[in-house]
Image 1 (cartoon, one colour):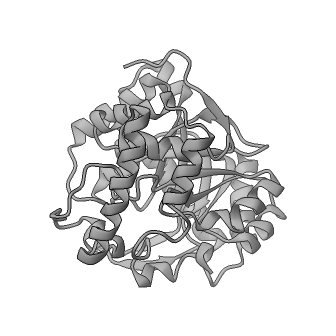
Image 2 (tube, rainbow, N blue to C red):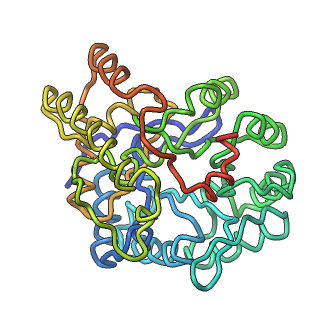
Length: 339
């Protein structure tokens, strides 16, 4: 699978040129149940060979499993692919041995500790974009970003990003050091970013890496109303996938399928094309775990939505249209972006 001239977007005004679609690797490390390691690595290789340059991970995905998987994929990829690849790493989330949530640690000493372990697992001399996964309510963001800035100065990190924070935190962080992007959920069914956060980012010249474009498969076109989620699958506890909410949300997919059909595209491709159409300062992340799903998502680059299409999608998916929050209540409390 090759893409001769993969389009690129810049991460903010101070960031690097990256592929217009990135690969989000979380699902390869147990977030949605078991995954096939060989297929996961083959999917990373296929993405790199197609022209994807941005690989997104977190040190807590599978408690280091995901970083080790990416390291293996890069080690066994072609030299040209390795040289093009950029790593975006989230840190700070604390876990227990049973995968229980333990909060967030953004203390400067912890930042450097997390980075040291990530560099070792990834087998690289630097991390391209480094960001705390959630705001630590006990540590001023200025201190956390300041610690990352020291890692930048030392050469261990290239650029600084943010994740799931609101406008006030964005401004405070940007007052300390250049911020290249905010990673945040953004999709047809998760549009809260548009009200205040996106205008703030554009004012400050900060880009977006958008995850959850298919809302964890909810609007990907491959689920049905009898769907069951196995052990370890985040969706089993996600409000949007609970029985009553799932029925209402899948009805939205029926509307999306009608619009996609008129474009000769799949539901997933249309969902990605909509996010791509929101601006060149936005890089959607493809959360594919298989080459088949990756190939489908990459096909969104061939889908052009005109003004009438965008208007129809905007009316069919107004802000707040989804039934249920995007995270369980306890996890929503950690989202500075939702306050």
